[in-house]
Image (cartoon, rainbow, N blue to C red; front, side, top):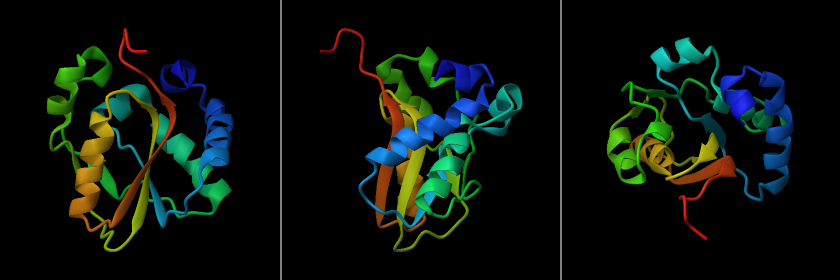
Length: 147
């Protein structure tokens, strides 16, 4: 995941998306990748969640909505924060410009740690009318010291 996210090895997105696709049992109406703030996108040069979502949408034949939601606050990286700080850091970080009324929206992210980013994106999607929201992630981390 580090090589995809920070090492610009975008070819890794395909096998990760393929592995995720094999585990998905529900059908969504569309896929929304976790948005990056434009400043972070400029630094990194790519959105790893979008790269994974692009392949996933193709494999599952589900429409991809890459620009339907945006990160409107340039927040510090979640990885630099404690679990308690992560929720506060992400509050009101996202806005959706598309109407998702009555839709089942699948959010795609590379890694879920505390779930704060996914929770805030889900809140924005709910405000945009989504009736059902799923979180599709490639990897899940657990707190240090957790069993």
